[in-house]
Amino acid sequence: MSRGTVIKTGSKVRQFKVGDAVYSRPRDHRIGTFAEFIAVNEADVALKPKNLNTTEAASIPLVGLTAWQALVEVGKVMPGQKVFIQAGSGGVGTIAVQLAKHLGATVATTTSAKNAELVKSLGADVVIDYNAQNFEKILSGYDLVLISQNSETLEKSLGVLKPGGQLISISGPPDPAFAEAFGLNFFLKLVMRLLSRGVRREAKALNVHYSFLFMRAQGQQLGELTSLIESGVIRPIVDEVFPFEKTGDALAYIETGRARGKVVITVTD
Image (cartoon, rainbow, N blue to C red; front, side):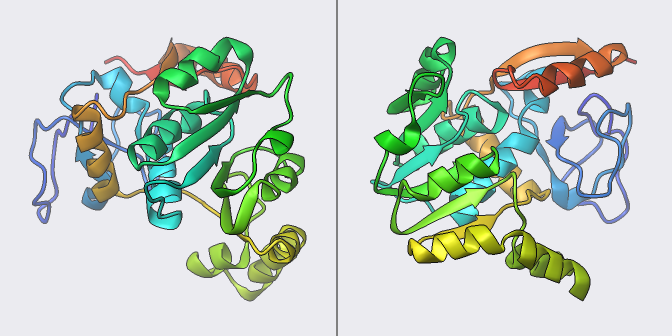
């Protein structure tokens, strides 16, 4: 695959042909996201949305799959529920806010004042300026929280859930279910159990559920996102675009935590 285009297929590939415009998040241990060419498992690929250019499409798979797996697969968000998404102007946040709204939820999020209008335009109903407000004093009775920040924020987030609600973290700590799903050995399972023991104990005391999400490659889900993008339900938010030669600068910019949406690196022939 080069420039998002299939240049060769294996003998057992049936869903795609040479020349197809596709996009993907390579599966774990498949190194090559910044490469000019990469071999990708057919099950991890989907057709690129027709209404996106290659740069816009490149911004979707990682954050789109994370949002989908958190809200649809694990969270099973239903119409009328209340969903709190941390960092709504970030990469995952910008897609998760749109998806949660599409699923029929009332959506709350945190962001800076300068990004308030952005997240409102994506569908956020409640916008909290994290520099001036404490979300844990404003929100209550939520069905689901999607968190991507530190342990202090995680502990505060548990308190905004209603009994039976669920907190899904993409920043950790990993829990026993994650260790089991990935087939980790006994020692690592024990480590995961110990790492998450505190938050799981707090969650149990509040009668809520904690889970750690580690996004995985999934072409079928990416295809679902393609449909939502082509129908106008979800739109990508691209902050900065860097040429391959500036990859270091791109990573440094991401590390500042100031990116709105996604940062994309372009590779030219």
